[in-house]
Length: 324
Image 1 (cartoon, rainbow, N blue to C red):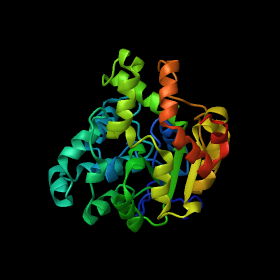
Image 2 (tube, rainbow, N blue to C red; image 1 turned 120 degrees about the vertical axis):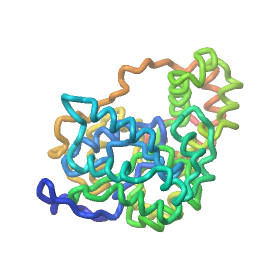
Image 3 (cartoon, helix red, strand yellow; image 1 turned 45 degrees about the horizontal axis):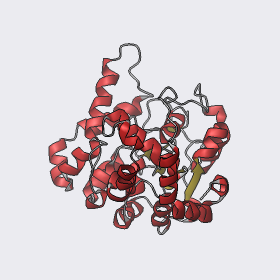
Image 4 (cartoon, one colour; image 1 turned 135 degrees about the vertical axis):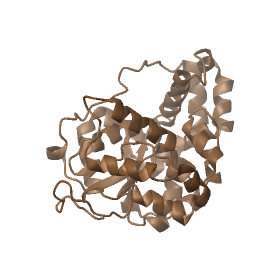
């Protein structure tokens, strides 16, 4: 693993880079936003100004990148640039003719549009970027001033073997971060998010058959719900020491310690370079919480019984205290 923290360039100097040093593949609703915020605040790291790039599952989220750029420009007080590397990222995005890029790279516009809308159901296994497209993605990590950098896209937990092979061929030395949460709590949080976005109603959250049906038939739910399966697919190509597994439970209990472990895993310095961001910072802390109704919890637990046992077998740790 390359560690550039001891050879950072003077301000303004830029070097070409070989792509992401690490990729967080999820899981969704398992503290990926916390991880991104922590890493974006680190002096020795550069995180793309777009958290979820969706390149390998849908061909890059241009819509979100445009919206993020507009917000930066409109802000008179703080443009939101961490440094010139943010500007270089947007230049790489917007100096590309998006329509030509889509055609030449073989990107499915329909998949891209669906990926931009979290409530739409799409089949991530249908997308496969060309080599030219992968080189375009690699360019998003150019000019980062010698720092470590990565891609945090929870949807990568849904990637199938052929797609992971594409990533490994291009980035064999990249480290993989997997955040694991109790599957019942994780999927309940996903359902709650759908309520906030209008895809479900509060009444739907009382409907056991509807929710179990989503687990069985909705790819956006089912493919994101099995951390053990995601791990097995990625571990066929990436070595055990290249995949870091961290638990939501530990982040909730001791975020500073988990942050230190993650920084060590990716080869970055610890707290001394974290700036002002606190380890327990949670931008979603004000979101309304709702306990799982008992009959829903029972149904979800039955659905995930084998998955819980498999997580316990593979990872141990906090999962050993989960009730199967």
